[in-house]
Every structure is written in structure tokens, then in C-alpha cells.
Amino acid sequence: MRRDVRSKPCVLDTWPHFLETAADSLQSPTAFLAAWHDRYLSRWPSLRRIVVDRLLAEGAEWRETRARWVHPIVSDKLPAMRRARASLLAVIPKLDADYRAVVGRRARMRYVILVDLGHGGIPVRYRGGPAILLGLTSAAHMNWQTRAPLRDHVAHELGHCVQDVWRRRARIAEWSWTPLDTLHAEGFAQRMGELIGGGRWEPITDVGWVQGCRLRLGDLAAGLLAAIRGKGDLRPFFASWHQADGLSMTGYFMGYEFIRSLEAAGMSLKEIARLKPGAVKARAMAFLRSASQQ
Image (tube, rainbow, N blue to C red; front, side, top):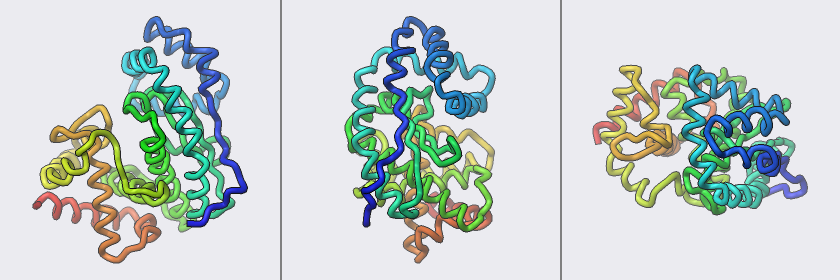
């Protein structure tokens, strides 16, 4: 993959400002959240609006829920967050060059390093262009401090951005984010991220996670099908703080296997990225039904 190294990536690193404005407000969840909202992120109002709007979608109690979850992590793991920030700054330049090699060297991405409240990696539109929010709290929670896991994490988010670019250029409607859309999008991002990152996918958490998912694929697919048909809770399959059959984030594995099955059937990644909603639904349901029989 040829890389254009002449252009430096655009990085907004908010960590120094966090240390100046909020790191001394860790005596309680309430004090921390007030400093996070009113002193730290207030420097970037549009960024704060993006983050808070996502939190508001969780309901009126997001402040209490997120403050209780984040406060002990930030209180205990500031050194881990500092190491994660250094690793992100180290891995972003090559990943950005590889991303632009895929979508075009004139493409620009903004990388925002911030202290998050539990949304660790989010592709968004910020300041008129694409951006990725890279959360240090979530990185510390997942024990992502060194370059390898953070390289894979950023590459995954860039995989989402590749799909978004290809779909926009083909004028395909934006995601409605049904469960099957999520399976498709997360699987594509994992596969494309594997290619952008330059190495075999080493995902998410524990040693043996891939093997565990593969051994349980039949039960996992059956469980996801049941959740989809019954409009049940999908967090056991896609959220890091929930589990399905004793494993977290198994939806990423199933999505990855779904994308690989489409490649095996002769589809290119660009064709897979540009599947229309009806095709995604039909192919994903067929994959899950087949996998559930294993």
C-alpha cells in the first residue's frame, strides 16, 4: 500500500487542557463531571455538543450513570491514560497515511484525543469534515496503553470512515442503524481496519477471545438472531461492559466473519461497503441462520 507521507495528520490533543482544568477535580463523581463539562470541554463548544448529544440519547440519567462509571477509572488510571495518549500520537501518522492511500490522498481526517465518558472511538462530523473521537478513559478501561492495541483500535474506526466515504461517493442512503446494519458496519470496519493496520486482527480484550468466539459461533449467532427477532437488547453483543455466552463484544467477531463470507463468495470490499439496506438484511440474516446451525 503506497503512502503519502508529505502531509501530517490533523490531531486535536485535548489531554494537556484536561490536566489543567479537570484533573484536580476527582474528589467525587459530581465534581469531576462538572469540571469535565464546564471547564474542560467548554473550550471546544461544538465538540462538547457532539459528545453530550450522544450521551443524551441514553436518557435523562446519563450524568449520574456516566459519572459513576468514569470517575473511578479516571481517578485510578491517569498514568494509563497518559501512556495511551502517547501511543495514539505515535501510531496515528502511519495509519492516517494508509487511510488516505485507500480513499485518496486529498482526503483529510481529524483525530480528537479526549477524556471520554465511555464512548471510546466514534467517527463523527466535526468542523465541517470527518473526525474520530479517541477516548483515553475507555482506552485505560480496556487496558489499551501500548501501540499495538491502539493501532488496531484507530484502524477499526478508520475502517468505518472508509465505508462512509465509499457509500457517500455511491450516493447510498445513510445507515438507519438496524441491528443488521450494525453487524455489517462493525464487521466491515474490523476487516478494513485489519488491512489499514497492516496486521492480523488482534481484537479486543483477552487472549483466547477469537478462539472462544469461534467455538461458540453457533450459540452466539442463535442468540443474536433471537435478540433481533424479539427486538431485544443488543448490548451483550456489541458493548464492552456486557457479555453474551461469557464473552464481550462478540458482535464484532460475527460481523467480521460475515464480511469474510461475502469476500469468499467473490465480492470486493468496495462492493460489500456499498451494499444497499435490503441486500444487507437478506445477506446478514442468511449468514446468521447458517452460522446458528454450526
